[in-house]
Amino acid sequence: MKQRLLALLLCFTILLMAAPAWASSVLEARLSSWPEWNLPSPLPRPSNDDDLVYPSWFKGLWQVESLDLDDPDAPPLIHQARFSPDADGRLVGDRAFNALAIGQALLGDQLLRVEDDPDSANRQMAQLKGDLRLETSVTGRRQETLDDGGFLADELVLQILHAPGPPRLSRIETLSLYKRCDVDICADQWQARYAAPGQTLRDRAVATHRYRLRFTPLPGSAPST
Image (cartoon, rainbow, N blue to C red; front, side):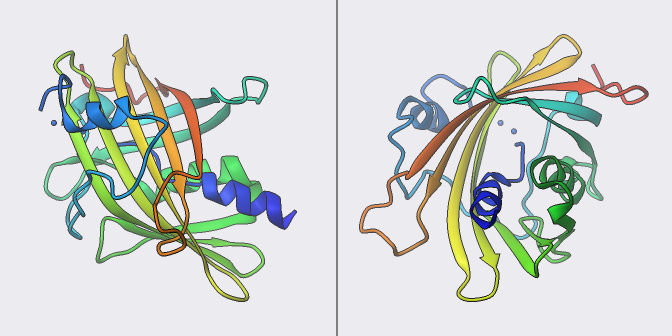
């Protein structure tokens, strides 16, 4: 059970990501090297006030269906996601709400709550049963607007599982491509997991995964056109 929980925690990343053209861009080059990813990645470290800023068509409440392309027999993961303007008028994800929604879809009642760091838009703490805490910090981010109206974004997060004994560390990079599909949003994600900092001489991805997502607006929350 513990091994299964740890495996699910490694998949518990904070979804979703938005600005120079797709052709010959930094993230295009990153995608072309998939799955041979290494660190350091070409992702600047965000400041505490930096956040992912979404296009207007993300506004509202969505049902998200996520398919694991590496396991076509697995049932889709279904959860909600919400995006709204912040105090500066930027459209951002409701990180605590979104992380709790996807975390409960993955872990069920093992996940108790998720809290944002009030001093940083890039850090969260999730409380789980069994006196486990999962600390997640965004350590790198780049985003690019595409000529076709979609957008591409890449985030690197450091996850620290606080449990009895030494903490367990891992790093997860998620590159996402989002496009409009009529009133829905379609997305492809490429994800890599790396060992904890300092464990290996060369930071190669130790595991890779592919996902396909579809965002469907929930009643009363249709996005802006």
